[in-house]
View 1 (cartoon, rainbow, N blue to C red):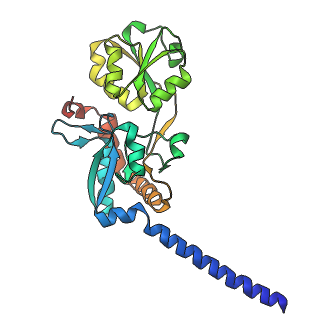
View 2 (cartoon, rainbow, N blue to C red):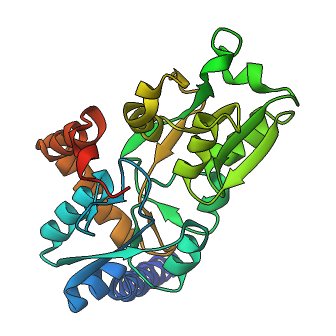
Length: 275
């Protein structure tokens, strides 16, 4: 008899517990960024223009690039308006956390340090660090390891994984950081630095623009593994679920391939970019 009473009590407790859990799930769903996006009728996307070929400004003043096209497809799938929010890189995570926009889509590499502050969706592309060297070092510098010497000046962009890679893997080199990756790379063209370290896609584009000068050599084999992903605020499993399903869909219905071909494999767009 006692066992029957205990069993009944456990069943009732289980129902109550599951009911409370369900109620908690409903409340969490109501707080999702998805609800804010649908209510506002717009998807606010944070990025920093200037990272070729992911987000750039064209000659008409509009924003274009791989991430911009993906964001537009995302907004279309949600049935809302795409709203670009150009933001300085060093403040982009704080801006997300203070709800200046809904999501970061800015070629951001997934790192454990960043993951302590924000959550990442599944990676949408994998890149790595590569090296552009001044022509005078051709044959002498064959990989990033050869730059690990105090006689070399290496540049990259402030606050990026390029900078982290130089400090971690080429610690003996003289390092100079710059606010913009183009400025950092131009130091090598001008002979003021020996090498520039940065993401493969950007370096491919830069070589397409500047390689004809005969001043550069491209060491195009990536020496790091860097997945890029969209970033959102913590505590929003519903938004992450939607983003991962969206990514799977576009990767299998041809849209991703079309955007990849346009911005990564082709350089036809360079002529339309504001310099």
